[in-house]
Length: 137
Image 1: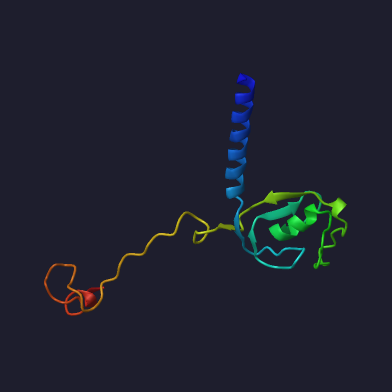
Image 2: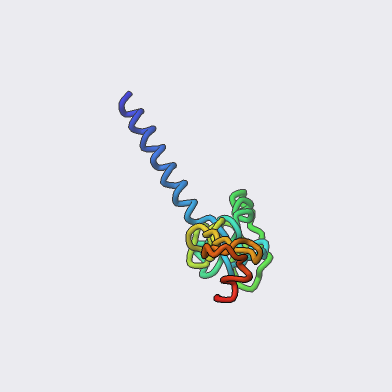
């Protein structure tokens, strides 16, 4: 019974690790076009072929690939047209911008609230902002 509990705990830990790994590879891959459907940039997960020099497909095309069919709209990169010739792996690099972030780093910060011209001046003078500090910027 203890082995079963250990095995379940190990499986749960492995699933959590995979979930974290996937989260790091999900986003918008700027400058990358899917070789299957020619959509760009790739949004979501990006898959790169381990056997080809430059062959990337989007998540939708990867789902089609798993059925044994590989569609290719792009003939420019001279990759084999047979699905058996490819081994795709989830991939990310510096082109990745994570969803919900600006510029690829951390969460977006709120900008400071601007004082409107007819509001009281934040300096405490009691005057309207447009008559007091607005010209000092």
